[in-house]
Image 1 (tube, rainbow, N blue to C red):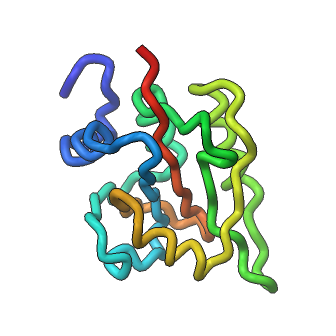
Image 2: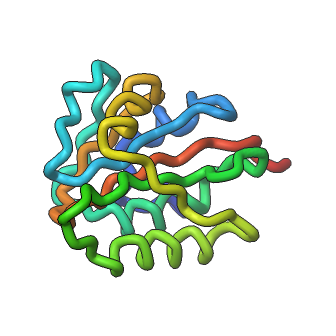
Length: 143
């Protein structure tokens, strides 16, 4: 354990966040997401929900100020019903920790899977909410 660092952040996740460069992406995936299919490093965060992980990392992780949408979620497949609380909880976490972050983008399901293949890593969470997957783009950390 470290002072000032959430106990939710494993050494592996902290190391990954630290090694990421600006413009690189990390995915926080719900429990339904096929994390190993992307072919990128997988970090386990079983038992944790994505909003609590966002609250743990966003004080340490600058979102990309040069991106039109530094946060993107998987869009709902036509015919499915989204849970509006999922996006509302993500937006609230972002707003608690960073200023003037643009709206969360929506990415079509299969386009999301393709984009995931180029991410730095994917965090497999225990979040059981449907369509709870979110991509964060790292920015330049202010000095």
